Image (cartoon, rainbow, N blue to C red):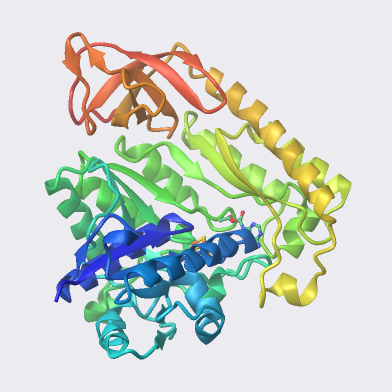
Length: 459
Ligand code: 5AD
Ligand code: SF4
C-alpha cells in the first residue's frame, strides 16, 4: 500500500523545524513526502495558536479537507502542533474530518497512532514532556533552498509572558544535547548548506550538561553553544532566534563579536515601550533595561542589526503607553519589526487577570501608527547601508525580476543583485561581495564587486 504524506506548516520557524522531524519519523515508517494535499494519503497540518487569527486560518483549512476527503475516501487528516495541544479532543468533536490530534512532544508516537487511524479509529496524543528534544532525529529538510536550514536547540518556554499561549502549548523548557546540535550543523555543511538558524523560544536560557559526565561536566550555556558551532563549522553562517531582553548576556555579545561567521543580527522582541505595560506583560524588564541592552549590543558590535516584535493594544494600554512604544521604535532604529494587535488567548495570565479592554478600532489605529513609525525607522536605517560593501549569501531568484537574484547580508537585510556578474551566473549558495547603491524600507539593491568567492564570510 502506498503511504504518501503532505505536511503543511503554520506559525513560527519552530513549526517548520518540527515538521522536518515529523517527516523524518514518518520516512522511517515507510511514508514518502509529497508536495500537495491532493497527492497525499495523509495530510498533516502543523498548527499555530499564537493569535486567534492564526487559529482561524487553520480551522478554514481543516474545512477544506472535507472536499478532499469526498474525492479521496482513504485520505486521513491529522492536526499537529500548538492547536492540537490547546484544543485536544475538542478538535475531533468540532471538526469531524480530523482523524488524528498530536501535540508537539508526542511525534515519536505517530507510527502507532497512525496504525490506530488505519483501523478507522480516531487517535490523540497530547502529552507534554519534560525531556523530549528529538535530539538524535535527523530532520528531513523540506521546502528548502538548499542554502539555509533551521536547527532546534531547545523546546518549550518557562517565561510566562502574560499574553502568550506558548508555555501551555509547548510545555516546559528543555535544552537539546549540545553535541547533537553541533553534529547536525556539521552534517548540514557536508550536505552543502551555507547557513543555519539555531532556534528556541528563548535561546538565552539554553543550558545543557552532559548527564553521562554528571557533576564533572561543565554547563554549556548559549554563548558556549554558539562558540562551539562557530568553531566546528567555520564556513557556515550562523543565525539564531529568539533572544529575550531580560536574559541576553554580554557573554553572548562577545562571542558574536569574536566570530565572523556569526551573523551580526539580533531579533530582540520589545513588545512595548512602556514600563507599566511591560510589567503587566510579565516581561521581566523595563524600558530602561531594554535600552541598556541595546546600548551594550552597539558597544560590542556597532554594525549589528536589530529586529523586534511589538504588540498593540495589550490590556490597560493607555495613549501615553502607546506613545512610548512609538518613541522606542524611533530611538532604537530597528531594521525590521513584526507588529501585531493583541489577541487574548485562553488560559494565559492575561486572560485570567486582565480584561481585553482596548477597543478593536483603537488597537487598529495604534497598530497602523506603529507600522508607519517602523516603516520610517526601517527606511532610515537601511539608507545608512548605501555606499557600503557587504558579503551577501545568495538564496534564489528575485520574485520581482528573473534578471535579479536576492540574498542576505550578515545583518539579515535582503539584497537584490543582477543575476549575472561579469559573465558569471550567480547561484544560490554563493557568497558575493556587494556594494549597496539603493535602499527602500524593506530591501537593498547592489552590484557585486570583485570576483565571486565561495565561503567568504567577513561581515
Ligand atoms: N497577541 C498578539 N501577539 C502576540 N504574540 C504572542 N502572543 C500574542 C498575543 N496573544 C506576539 C509577540 C511574540 C510574537 C511571536 O507574537 O510579539 O513575540
Ligand atoms: Fe510557534 Fe507560538 Fe505559533 Fe506555537 S503558538 S506555532 S510556538 S508561534
